[in-house]
Image 1: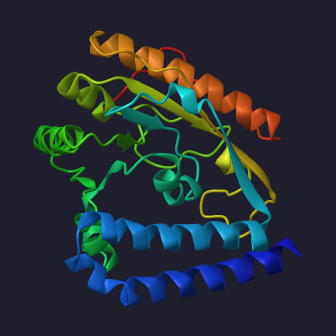
Image 2: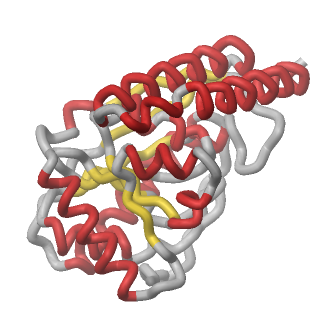
Image 3: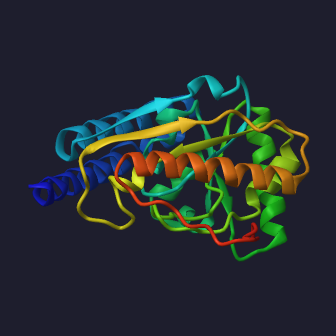
Amino acid sequence: MTILRSALFNLLFFGWTTLCCFALLPALLLPHRVTMAWIFVWLRVTYWLEKTFLGIDYRVVGRENLPDGACIVAAKHQSAWETLKLHLLLPDPAIVLKSELLKVPVWGKYLLKTGMIPVDRGAGSKAIRSMIDHAKVRVAEGRPIAIFPQGTRTAPGTWRPYRIGVGALYEGLSVPVVPMALNSGVFWGRRAFRKRPGTITVEFLPPIPPGLPREEMMRRLEAELEAASERLSVAAGGPPTPRPAGATATV
């Protein structure tokens, strides 16, 4: 039955998304807030599809840890689920994403219109400088910056090093970092066709204040975010996460 429900969800989700991409093209000519209002319609219907056909819901813990104004939200990335929820969890976030996504027909236009922050992962230090420059503009607008510190999806029970991008943002923006733990991968696996019904937990941890040395912030972020995400995943039936001794963040 879960295979059938997953198949129905995929059919409806991709159909709904394709319809919205083309039907909402005029919104690209309208102000940012109007475009976002239509995107919220797409997201809310998608959320309804998840609950109805997959039996997946979510709950949020620790909203009080989100500061007023701009901050960096360093989110654990276990599945595609959280990419569909960041705009429901945060107030108009600017999301750091790989620049290749801007080349996706139609979809890339929406990413540009909504002020996302592209990163060319092959451009080295130039990409870091560009990311910080884009992020400063969004912070000046009072928007939170959302970034996946490991750079890609990492399944529960596996370890991947934290990349230095979040540390560069921390130094360049001088705003707090809020770790965002979750256990979405237990229910919605990476590249998994079949989804498991249940309630995903998202937990915002206490913010890490600005002004710490980059290395100290990175160690603290990784320790706190990994421990909280592992706790949530194990509680939902997922595996614990082994971490290699002496592992450090990479560029």
